[in-house]
Amino acid sequence: MAEAFVIAPRGALGLGQFLAALLCAAGLLCTASNGTNAAPRQAQKIIVDSDYNTISDDGQLGIMAAQLQTEGRVKIMGITVVSGNQWLKQEVSDALKAVERLGIGDRVGVYAGANYPLVRDLASVKAEQAAGAGGDGYLGAWGGPEPKTDAELTAPPDGFALYTHVQPKSAVDFIVETVKANPHQITILAIGPLTNIAQATKRNPEIIPLIKQIIYMGGAVHVPGNSTKAAEFNWWFDPDAAQEVVRLPIPQVVIPLDVTNTVQLTKSIYDRIAHAAKPTVVTALYQKLTGYGFDGKHGFETDPNYTQNVWDTLTIAYLLDPKFATESHDEFVDVIAKPGIEDGRSVGYGNAQPAGTPLQKVKVVTKFDNDRFFRLYIDLLTRPVPVRETK
Ligand code: RIB
Image (tube, rainbow, N blue to C red; front, side):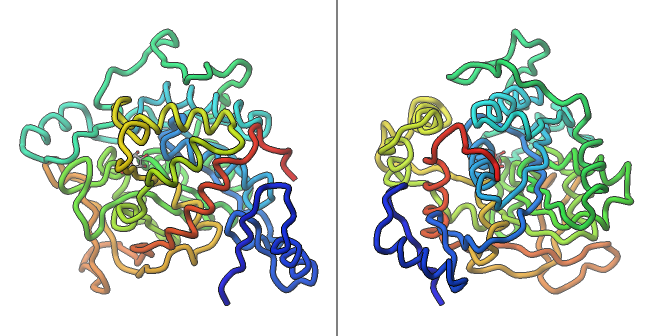
């Protein structure tokens, strides 16, 4: 039965919402205005392992998670940060400001993780590019200098965090301790390179059977890569970690470029956030940083035909309801981790278990319910900030 979505101006109880409220009270149907089933459920405990940025897809996911936390849909155990989009120090700075801006800094800790990949270095990146690895030219942190001091950090438009500080515990220790304290309950939203998760599971293999699931934004299983012709950025940035983690005997869901390429942010969706009827600090940041594209000059504010990926944000929608994935299949997936232009390529083997490999089948999502997803996306990115108190 199709879900009865009730999308109405916040606060105005229309007939649709009144009927929905009656149905929900009768225990027949509970659907929140954000396009998800609001039936009272236990909050999903998540660790967001992220190469955080203020309001590209990692930052957007952080906002969505914070809003869902106020509904009791998720409980953000913590944000663990790893170099990827930016160097660790800058990402931690962005994440601290994000939790402070959202009003959750007192209950969602930011934990510093790996600053460098397990093996890859700048020399290998340069060698690949020289060898014709191709790609869109986005190299993330490798594309710029590593900030060594606070003076070298870039503040978001609304300034650095004023009173929120990084947790003294490392990201790896936090992952290990949180999984052990919540056996079979933790979902890791792995939306950056997998260095932290590889280090945590390698150092403490006893947590492997205790992790409920990993939902990745990563990989390009049956489509070309983006950072190189072969590989998707997150898994390319640390191929050795990606290979180690994807081979772990843990329930895994991969949200690869195969599906994220088909879920594009358009001007009409962008406008409903950037030019929201009730502006917030988030919608203002969204306009300032998303409206002018990754180069700061060409984006939705200058080109009505511009489109942009929302990559990571699909993972939290899938967590809320796997039915957001309208097509997926279970297959053996591995990651190539060897120097050269194939480094970081994700390989899907379908039903054929490659001989001699410790692979297990993972769920690979290939199509999404875009309309339903963007209703959730718009709703969560236009809600009041700071977020309402967590239930
Ligand atoms: O390839 C897409 C991934 O690269 C996303 O996680 C995005 O944040 C960038 O890190």
